[in-house]
Length: 156
Length: 156
DNA sequence: TTATATAGGACTATTTTAGTACTATATAAG
DNA sequence: CTTATATAGTACTAAAATAGTCCTATATAA
Ligand code: FES
Ligand code: FES
Image 1 (cartoon, each protein chain N blue to C red):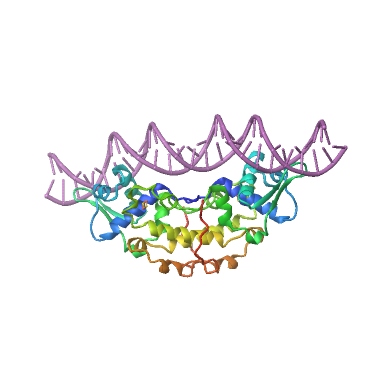
Image 2: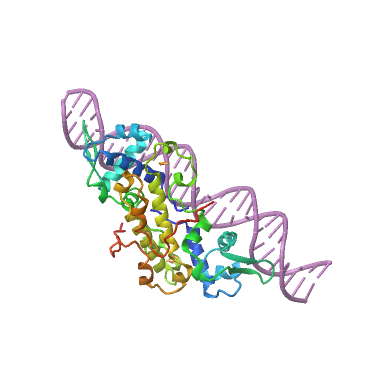
């Protein structure tokens, strides 16, 4: 299924909300109301995003969170990494030595390539794209040329 | 982390092994020996691949499995789908109505775009690429142009 | 000094995944 | 036609990852 976690999904919702008013502080309690995500969960996500330097935090009364940069410079790949850790499609690509058949493995290099391809696809979409109404064309031009098509064959 | 499951990883190892002799039948017991994956697990993977029409099966004595087509026509996206189900990065993109904030959601369309971008990246790599020694250049040309770069920032 | 808001970590419940086992069915060969 | 062999299908258990919550510490504005 290759899914991002729920928390990552929340992160995009929350960041999209914040990106609408990029110059204001947003407290966790405000975001709860706007997004219908439970407060403890919102809080958890905000902490992770802050730790990953996507958000700046301000403690104390009238505190809250703020984007560290313009939405155009926040990539989806970065958001996923902030919540789930480094993007690595297989265990083998993460820690060397974790896999038993590593020495005789011919496909490790290919997984690295796949990894890179996916990463780049995720890097091509930014928070600015999420805030804006969907401009399909704008994203399409960043896709692999050979496989550019309209029927995705993603059915069940 | 955005990982494929272990079973999917096994599937690529197993398929790569089979693709080396694409015209011979391969029994589960043979594959176990060649890949160091436990028999019941190999068996499970082979059944899934067969069900997804990536492999043909032959029962009975001297039976085994065989690729349904040339390795060049087996995409990684297909392998992942065979083992894990349809590639869909968020719950929202899979079943309509599953998400509470769906009606007011502005980012659903964008997730579909991301989904498509990832799918195409995965479609660009085939089983033939897995069998061959890594030809980095061959894959690079199929990557998003805007983001074509060498430093992946995937560190831990 | 107090109210408010984030930081950090610990913890539990739930869900997903991995791995195994068992029964049924098909096929080749003697 | 009987037997050995190999896949089909399903059900089940154990392990791991995820989701969600809560508690204590710390910083800041008023
Ligand atoms: S290194 Fe683990 S399967 Fe290749
Ligand atoms: S439809 Fe679920 S978050 Fe958008």
